[in-house]
Image (cartoon, rainbow, N blue to C red):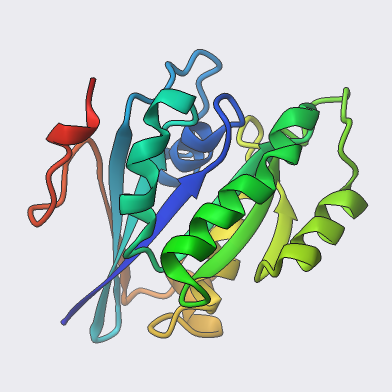
Length: 205
């Protein structure tokens, strides 16, 4: 039986949403990512004992002209990841706006994660304490700082999410996402494809 979880990435343009997904999926980093146009989709299927879990990763554009598309992709999400750039004060100030989108569409029926990305950079203007305080203030499930460039905390981010999902609990999350070399775990990465039940044609420009 296939269980699907929809994870939507939100945040201003340039905060590193695409690079976080790429680091998780392929363990690679490209310093010249093109801006996401509309919505991009990737999925990771995990076979865990008698369960098949598919994580659907939805990468949303941060530009203002695509904002009208965002609510429809939040509406049926299981997890919302709000990303800001720790060297960009404006992206941090906009977190509340993205949070409001989530609450308006999903209420409390969604896991919300706040991610401070680009921890590898030295010109940090948002402290870890500020990120943690904001996460608590707006009611996120947890806060974490990451670097998609060097991979810092990226796997940990998804492990923590997995542990909060009904089908992946406790040690199962570690096993499914790389914490255990168990032989009955298999993962398949599927990229550049769209899910059969949904069309992305309206999201391209």
